[in-house]
Image (cartoon, rainbow, N blue to C red; front, side):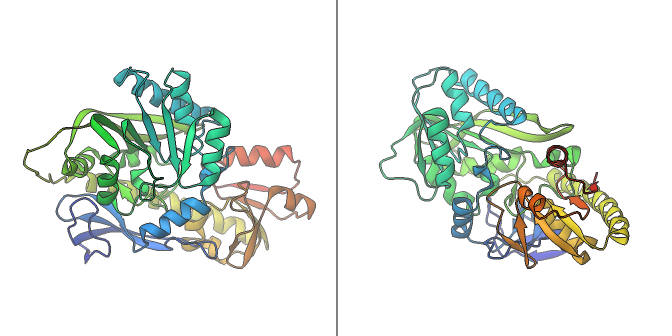
Length: 401
């Protein structure tokens, strides 16, 4: 066992000691506020699995306010622009409507991104809706796309006089939060007595069954890895009572799916029950299987990269997201002569990685760059390949899977 005293302490139970399951490294753009690497720890006390990073909550808030990938309505999740995202959000809205059919209830979506979930709730007849997101651009998108009240801010910096709500939604938010206990304390204060909290997070026990890119779930943003016992251990500390819990799998791209858990929690007038933090041993074993599966995929990708780089003096790398950050840190791509990075998301264009500026797709067309293109996104590789074909670029294209 590879034990260590954690830098962060367990976000659920505050235990100092944990077992290192994996070390994840990244090559980040210059000036990026998040960590270029961390250990994945399993808490000795409760079994929660988390990224042992020293990045502060303030740094995460800055990142989501200024560098949010969710602003781009073409590529991000949360706005319902893609058919996969739309289907996911519609089903979530229908689940909420079935649990809470009163259309007059006041609902807050924290981390609303571009407002897609709120938009579907509005279609179902809910008319007292509010969104909160760190990104001013996402807030503006929510207002313009759906005509829904929205504010720029975070759990930690909400606007004044926001009031309280019958339902607060946290859909794919808690996995991003450095200070979990403080965040839940603040959220609980926004819920009316008798009101509800809806929580949806990635299902870490299911990672191994849905691997399409190596270590896709160990990234710069997802730093908490939940299964049912850990979510319960967190929320019962604040007097919240579970009313419904379930699991789901949703499609994110052709042939690719993602596991999640969801639950409804009620705020009681008072809770006098004794707090007991349960220990879970299952998640560690599931995460270890996921790590082994990811290692095999990473090795296969590296073998392919080595073959490509033997035949190509210079290459273009298309895609500067999480997979590219890992490949640059841990594979032969680190030694490649990269003449340009390309990314379709405007938020990434102009950033600098390893001294090389990230270009828009249009710029490589204007510059008539003909080097082979390595597509360093598995999730978006079909969309990227189609974009290359539509632009009629003559470059050879290499897909990693």
